[in-house]
Amino acid sequence: MNRKNSFWDELKRRNVIKGAISYLVVAWLLIRIAALLGDILEMPLWISKSLFYLLLIGFPIYLLVSWIYEYTPTGLKRTSKVTESASIRKKTGKRLNKIIIALLVLILTVLVIDRFIITDKKGKNTFDTPAIAMISKTIAVLPFQDFSEKKDNEYFADGLTEELLNLLSQVNKLKVTSRTSTFSFKNSELKIPEIAEKLNVTYVLEGSVRKSGKLLRITAQLIDAKKDKHLWSETYDRNLDNIFAIQDEVSEAVVKALEINLLDEKPLPKSKKTDSEAYKFYLQAIHASHKSSDTQKLKEAVTLAKEALKLDANYVPAWLLLSRVYETQANNGTLTFDEGYSLAKEATNKVLEIEPKNALAYAYLADDELSYDWNFAKAKKLNAIALKLDGSNPKIISLTATLAIALGNVESAVRLQEYSTSLDPLNPDMYYQLLNIYYCADRLDDAVNAAKKCIELQPDRYAVHYYYARILLQQNKIVEAREALKAEKDEGWTLQMLSDICFKLNEIEKSEAYMQELILKYKDEMAYQIAESYSFRNDKENAFKWLDKAYKVHDVGLNEVLSEPRFRNLHSDKRWQKFIDKMGFPKNENDTQ
Image (cartoon, rainbow, N blue to C red):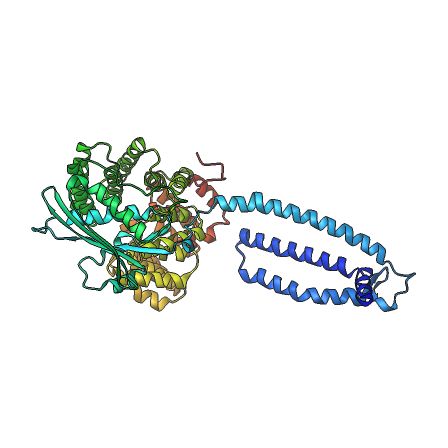
């Protein structure tokens, strides 16, 4: 006991304890400051890791030196050789006390700055992502089969499937695969366990519809795909007017069969009810709208949705459908850009008149403010409302990822889009967006994999081979990039990428020839891409010239200007901030009006 006390007293006498405390406080400060600077300056993670291990190794060395040596007015000397009369240990101890107090005050200052300035600001600039780990139940709603005698009610069966999917996706503890992936198995010969494996789900809901006039027979069954076991099944013989009650009953039965505890959640969502004839027009409109590449079908969708609204002017799903179709028509040229987006916003605002807390309406308005008005602050404000109202909706999550990339929040965009893709694992649209976000995040290997998956699902997708080639070029895989570009059918994208590849190969004359042909043919449609290529060449004068041109023609590519890696070399130019301010990106977190 005496030995231990003597040793402890000796540690204190030699100021080893105070020295150790000082070392630990300084080490914590250095690590915390490095972490903060890492966030601000985007330093590689290895720098802070190296500092941590260096300080860790240094700690026992420092303790050993503190024990063996003593600081004196003439420098460091071995403690054993310093006489008591010549020792200044007490003065050194008092100085260490002051140093420790000063360091603790500094720690408090750093914590305040981190919590109330940096972390708070970072939190406001990022987007919440769903707690994926908390969601243990995964389900896919397969397309219900049309068993009607004339096989003329496919639109009704598909519509019922979508309505059930929408209802179940609003249950926070249930992860529901989105429509595109599940509908890829329509009329499939695969067995349920095989489909479930491809969709990465545990449960599958399937069924059939038999409709004759206003009489309905709907059969639904829930299957545990891993065990290939039926958990629940039911047949409903009802009148068409009871379709909404059937939808609610099926969704409630699924939740009950899956033993999902909803005591701490809001009540189960209910179907939006309307006149049976209006509902028929609405389902037909949905059916037509999914053929988005067919401009005539989109016009048909608008006509049918309007027919539904003639019968029920307050039917929210029809207004939401109109909003999306109008935006699609604006983007594909069926309507002018101004007309299409104006009609889309008008339809969405109508929803909020009828239903002020409709989450999708806020998300759609945010998307319109982003693409049409470039009102980024307002878009963020509206999107935040949508997330607060329904943070589990896959459509809202995907639109939030789009907004995040526009605002330069690449890390948030990655998390959001990865989650959105997990909800729709066979949808090429998801991988198309994901590959671009990975590209912006410098995760080029992941971007390549996403591009390959998109090509696998939709080989003839517009511009996907161009993006694949661009990612490969970013990796300096020039031969592979040129080979990938051969599959791109669009002339404009091909000209731009050939110009970039030739520039990379130092074939300057060829590069310039491709660039001039691109400008001659596509100066209005591809002003943003031309600016990208000039920035890629480090030709800042032409890059800014074409950015201004893109702004004048309202090139929607500018939505991603903050995240685009090719523009990073412009960020230090004083003209960059002026351009960003002109675009209207929020200057600070209070700029949300």
